Structure formats: C-alpha cells, structure tokens
Length: 259
Image (cartoon, rainbow, N blue to C red):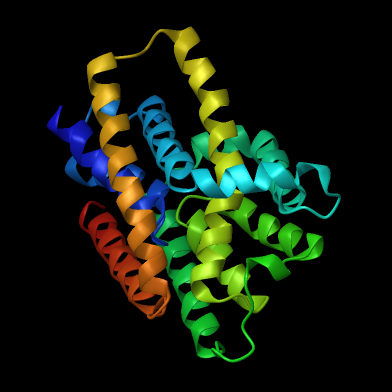
C-alpha cells in the first residue's frame, strides 16, 4: 500500500510538471526493484484516471465555457478536438510499441533531448508580443497536438513538449501550460477509458491498492496544476530541464552499474 501511495503522489506531480510521468513510473519501480501490481501497466492506467479527475476538477469552469462554444464553428472546443486527433491516431497505431519499449536507457536519452529543447526554447523566449489562449488558431492547435503525440514515447512529457510548442507560437508560458492541460484532457480520458475497460475485463484489480493510488494522484495532481501555472507566470522551464538532465544521468549511471 505504501508503494501505491508513493507512486500516486509521483504520478500526480509528474503528469503535470514537465518531467515525464511515464519515465518516473517505469524507472522508479525498476530502480527500487518493486515487484507485483504496482509495477504493472494496469496500475499506471489507474493512476492516470486519478490525474484525469484532477484535470476535470481544476478546469471545470473552463470546460463549461468551452462546451458553450460548441455551436460556434471557430469555438475553442473545436480547436481542442482538432488538436486531439494526432495523439488519438498515434495512440492506436503505437499502442503495442509503447507497451514493449520501456527501456530505461532509451528514457534517459529522451529526457536529455527534450531538456535541450526546453533550454533552447527559453533562450529564444521574449516576454514582449506574447499572446493568450484566445489567439490560438486551428493550425496552432493542430501543431501543438502533433507535438503532444510525441509524448507517447516514454521520457518526452506531454505537458513539457506541448508547453514548448505553445511558447514557439508566442503564447505566454502560463497560457501555454493552460492550453496544454485542456488539450491533454481528452487524450488522458480516452486512454483511461480504453485501458480501463481492458483492465476491468481482465479482472486483475486490487481495489484497495488501485483506489489509494487514484485518490492520491487526483489530490496531488490538482495541487501540481495550480502551482505550475502560478510558477510559469514568473519563472522559466529551466529548473525542470536541469532536473531532467540529472534524472537522465542517474538512470545512465544505474544502467552502467548493473551491466
């Protein structure tokens, strides 16, 4: 149970902080040699359901307003729908590959590459002439959606890569994060429903462990969303990039020690 609670906290934080939740959920059980259900894809799916709850709760007012734009041909809800298409298509095509490619060394390389992108984006970032979410076009939404699809590769970070994409189209950091989370909600919901239905049919569920993980990840996720948006109003992505480099180094060193 303690491992489930720890991983729930970890998922709630890393799903929204641009450090890659999949990297942490794969690497830490491997690093500490945790066995059993907490080191399974089914438990990871349960934790994602928890972070879905935190997304829906935090952005509940935003989604009410978005649904009101349903009747408008240029409404933000349709832009989010367009941006969701790439990850939906990629997810169906890459599902088996994702399950099979959970190698720590590959994750370390991916962590480092995206860290470099973060630093490069910040180097070219200027607070002048920055815009808000309301300026996003269908083309912008599709571009951010395509980058979000890249986050299916463990180590990329869905929030990280889509925030970078938002910043490249001149969004303010905090607005890039807000749009990233709104865009990510249908993707997280779709994955949770798809994998969750498979999990229920398999009957491989420990309701106590899964329930604890979901509850903790939902609470932690809500807190992470709130404070990341506040953080990005003032500070850059560089601290997260440095953390990712450090994590990649630890992974590579651990792999080297075990060979």
